[in-house]
Length: 130
Image 1 (cartoon, rainbow, N blue to C red):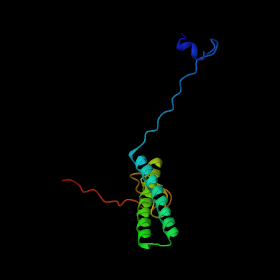
Image 2 (cartoon, helix red, strand yellow):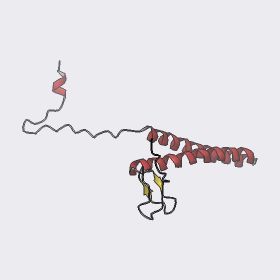
Image 3 (cartoon, rainbow, N blue to C red):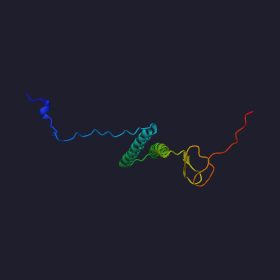
Image 4 (spheres, rainbow, N blue to C red):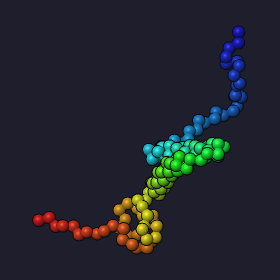
């Protein structure tokens, strides 16, 4: 009988051991997971819409109302995907939004745009407590 260790290849005794390398895991935020789910949903809806149009074409019987409803559902999912992409981009940049005047990104709590100087927050005087 042969032992299992005789079947395994042996490393030469002069070879140094290979260090175990680990790749740090990037934490998936809830928004990234939602974005991925929306991307899959949009792709599936687009595939289904194309299949639906193809089936209607092969039968030479188009139901425009059915196509419009399917396209509207896809547009809604695509709009949600675009919003998730926008929020992820802001999250990655550490930005809170875009300037309404020049579209430059600004951080949370910014009162004025760093690029064009437009006021981003309204300034109200604090009331004095008596």
